[in-house]
Length: 515
Image (cartoon, rainbow, N blue to C red; front, side, top):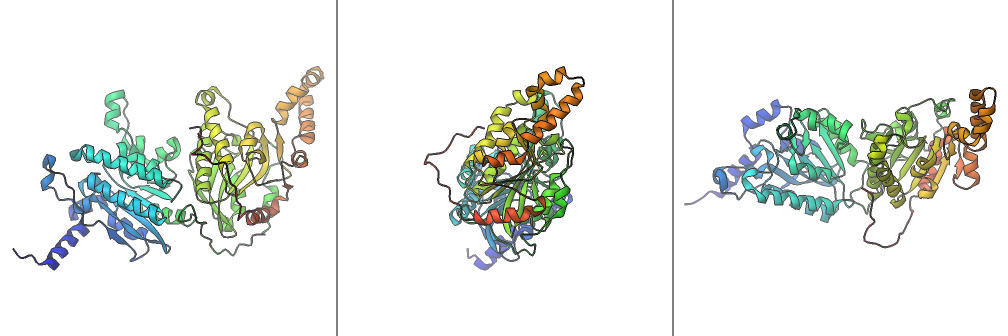
């Protein structure tokens, strides 16, 4: 029988374009979700998407699959551009077999993973899937394993960004967890290893899918999510903004954006941001906003371990990563979650040639049995490892408190900071003045007529003698005590002289990071 090739091509292309068909597309829209093609069209620069594998079909014949039509096998893959820069992308389409992952679906994802790694460009995954395709059994499971392997090969080589835009359950959650940044959409995205029904059967607990694995749960409780969006469009906008700070791969420098904000800008407000009372909190975000270009700070993991702030900004048009203790939450102490948040972020910055600026104001580690039993020693060691291992430019600014082990952990000179600055308000000591006075002057305080007043006086004496930046500066642990108003200029100069930093280390297979 003669087949009109042009008509057959047109038929197939129409089928692929429609994916799950008008009824399922309408249902997707009713849930507040876009289709895979709509998401890609919004994410990429107009008319830059080139699809790969559009005609791929599943090969399963079991459980009635031989009669099931699955256009593009439920995943759209290809490449395009964002702000003119090449990226690879895959988008699962829930309108086709619930976006489930089978052998060929997985092969398409693996294909763009391989191509992105070879090209040295970011890869973006738009996940909306019911999980492994049960009808394909072990072939589906093998597909996940191949994807995980490629996630690991790409780690630290190219940026990997995942957007969770629908369900993601079981093995499907591990690929996102292996990527650099996870963005989740409120109300439509869920991630969990075992769903609510299994949990109820096994443990008797009753929990909804949203409470168990929704965006807010993973932003505020588990720390799995880095960013949360109100809808699909906002999530894809966040991807574009994130990429603007990142290089294409580990061998390139991040892009430079023109800035009309003078690098030597003087900010008089910084001279009064630190309260006179050393125990009074303030918002470190006010400091960050006055340091970065135009006050533009892209915070990550906001809502999780808020005693520590991490995020991306620019100084003089160049990308920087900022790590800062937040005195208004738990007094800026370091705890288990903050340690994990910090270590992961510093390693991300180091992987992609982004300098680290650390703003220090911490009285130490959060005390308590929950922290000790939870392994604060092990988790805190991750911070030490991440900073000491990092070879990118590292600049530290001590704003106020820097006590004990936490002083060392927050990128001290000892851990490899290239330049260390301090404001005149900095207090650097083994412990806080009050605690130190209780130990050093215990007998004098106890024998005084007014122990409370004596303790306060001795704490002030200790602060003047030891807990100030000039003692550390005299030992060479601080390079300069600077005027807070001139902070931006000092940081810009430091980054400029460190731009071509080279830091060779002993050759080895890899270290054994505490995890």
